[in-house]
View 1 (tube, one colour):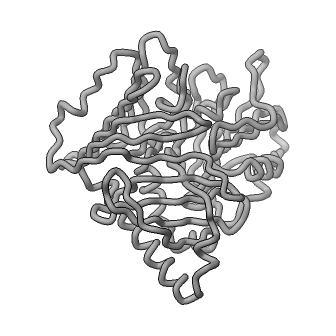
View 2 (cartoon, helix red, strand yellow):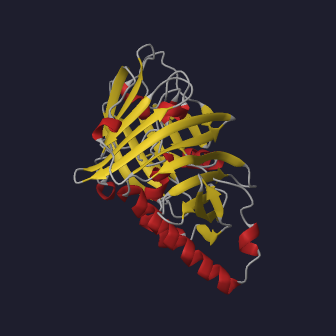
Length: 365
């Protein structure tokens, strides 16, 4: 489910991150190091390998199974319930998410095309999912429910062992199904930890908990019911909420090759393992000049950097810190440009990255 967490996390209007390529992304638990420190080294190695195999299976299950269910997620003491319908056929993946409490809203996804539907009386901007202004924290957080995290993890699992410790936790029952817990512990203070509960039969991710240093829970998601029908009729993917729609293609703004990017900005510090994975310049609505967008990631955590020229307007801009759940943002002005960093990482990460950015001046500037 690569969908924007935005449409469901907001109350009045929903931001977007997201995602992120996210997430999203959902969220994880405490007691991070107890399991790892109580096991002998040989057991740790075996536990780590098994955990990575489960995560690899989780990624494949997220993209290949039909399912219908309800999950809840908790953030900032607010509980949201969402119905999800996921279908796979010869044309790809199709998904529908429906809010079950609070303001009615739906998200429809057909492969990479995502459409968010809000009630008629709620204003929505097409560029809300990525435009770096005062509400950037909300707008940048991709809603990836469980499967966004499922897809992000498998790609760089072996490389990520240098920056995260993977181990097995205790089995548990989630939504009436047997699961195996996987614990992901960061090796430094620049990223979050995760606890994942993976369905033993299907490999689907049924519960996630995100934690910060010290074990404090930031966000969590859990399925309360899950069905696995052989077929799902197309009628179940048709939206029922009447309202304003806005659509985007996941990743369409990130079309530039990060290996061949040219930027007048240099990032002086990155957490170990972070690398540039996407880079674009887009002329967004209400913008008179292109907004530069760079994404740095270690394969699990990510930070987006938005750079926009200062114009002679009264539009406010994020200055200092802002946060929404696990998402932290840092904004400043440098060389007559607004710089905004947003990521599902601790605040120390976006702050240190933001303060390390320097403008590479030229004689033509």
